[in-house]
Length: 324
Image 1 (cartoon, helix red, strand yellow):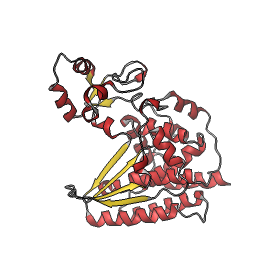
Image 2 (cartoon, one colour):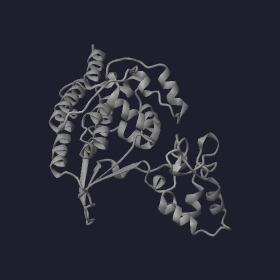
Image 3 (cartoon, helix red, strand yellow):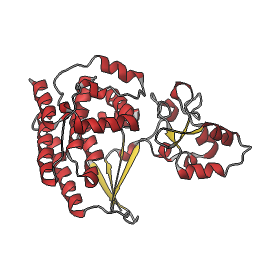
Image 4 (cartoon, helix red, strand yellow):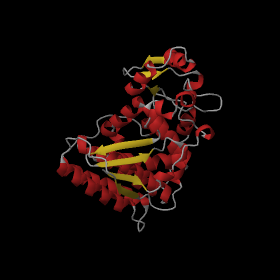
């Protein structure tokens, strides 16, 4: 198996109870089937078993979840912001979501791509404060390729296209705003070769796009109240926000043939940081609010495809007008 990770990936470490915005607060936690099967084997006299049984429930999507405690805290998050389930059973028996977060893992046959999400404050600081381009390392291990039905020709077309987009975003010779426009134009032209998709049709204000129905952290609502329309800053922080979205989402086009949506996400990620406060905390709040809420993310993806203000040409216009 070929393993691809951002160059800083191995340096990431969870700071547990010292985290300024715990991943164990704000979200419902899914209990995966393997974890549920293990919980059934526990002695019913164990306190942790009794606590687990008391909080198991179903969400609107039919997933088995743990009912949140007050202030949307995980019912196993103790007063020291540490996990009682982890303490009682070991990390290996916490839900897979908890074990993996903030990591994301995508398999493409013989290639596995791993990264960390801006939704984690520590990961956000690492990516936002990189002193240079976000680059990637490749290693080979003995693990066999994952079974798949990927179109090989499309996969290699996308791999090469993503390299082209990285090169566009890494071009220090021109302003980042111009690089984002070049990336969007490239994605639009590539889309025409892969297969046309429809854009637009839904009338919604640009800033309303980011006003998510499901509230995770009230701080995001405060950011939304006073957006500052200003030029994009051409720095590594903004560049690496764009590269993050391309790394995380662009290759998903191997399944749906859509390369313009991840390109839009990359450009909008920079605009989010520009308009709502230039800091790792801003992009962290947005990511936790959107990328890790199924309801909010489904809405965001839909708007990326249907909103008139989020058509590629509309975003290009927003970027260009903002630099004048």
